[in-house]
Amino acid sequence: MVTWICSPFQERVAKLVLRGARMNPYWLIVAFTLVTQLCVFFRWLHRRLRDAAIERAFIRDMAINHLPHIYHALRCIAAHHGLEIEDPPPVRFLELNGKQGKVDPQRP
Image (cartoon, rainbow, N blue to C red):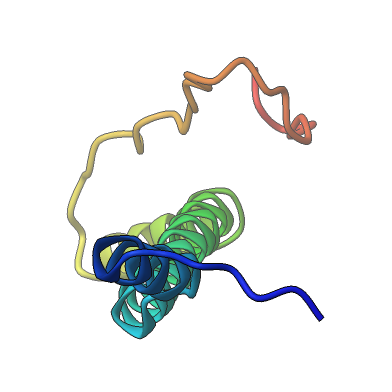
């Protein structure tokens, strides 16, 4: 076995180097916190995008399927009371992101 003869200064430096080689546990806490915040952010972003898509589909379905029936019932009520009402406005969608959805056959 070889024994190294070193000064007290070299022993202190060696201890500091060995101590610094180990991972500081506080960095693990910081890393865990950052990863957790990133996961929460991605979950929030996914939920927000999904809710926007559901809302967009609901509004489109309401306009295409239900508004014609609502306007027809309104016309029947107005005719029963002897009132004249204007024609309902046409339902048109402007796709801003370039997607072409289902085309409504009743749409001009």
